[in-house]
Image 1: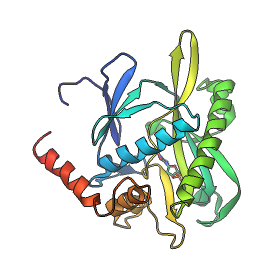
Image 2 (image 1 turned 45 degrees about the vertical axis):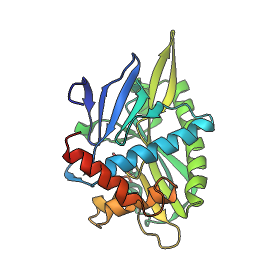
Image 3 (image 1 turned 90 degrees about the horizontal axis):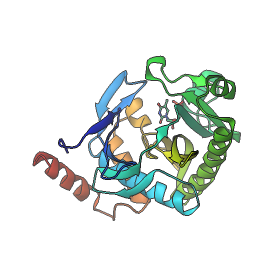
Length: 259
Ligand code: TMP
């Protein structure tokens, strides 16, 4: 791993040069941050679970015609992806009021929204990822109008698909964040889904108990974050019954051997 050229290190992932031009290796860390990295910690085994969960969701999205950066999973913590030019916008889709929407507008957490809301945030840690309007995106040229139309269409399709997928396993998809990137084909740019989809960037509530199965367990000091991520993976059928600990133990064993 150390022999590869590191391209970028983010809060939860590292990007390495890929084996072919136009590819990268995305490595999932156990590090967790919240509130623009003011709170830092680790969630043991998170990287392994997010790698697997994101692989699963991106693969399914591919089958319904959403273009994504995902190529294939390489090992427990790494996946091969297409290199994209990240569009500096975090796209948040909300079905139920929670988090900053509740805080900003005084709407009780858990209130079902009468319609789905798409919000855009400018991806800039120094500014704390501020909420922005379409006007800012157009004014500062972060994405073209055509790209924004494609992004909004894809975000709605991803939401429809994921609401159904999670409902089928007893989970309410409250909200989630997506990132998109540009790939160049000849002289034309195309927008594809990038980054990851995992309990780090989604709010997932158990449909009967309302128990939180996502990073809010870490953000709000609720405890049991590793178990919550495992539960999501288990319900998605990614951890055969009783094997959750085995998979994670194997990863820890490899980490100790320095692999
Ligand atoms: P928020 O309520 O804090 O604005 O978050 C909305 C959703 O977006 C929630 O599912 C968490 C996700 N999210 C990220 O993945 N990264 C971020 O930096 C932020 C602020 C939110």
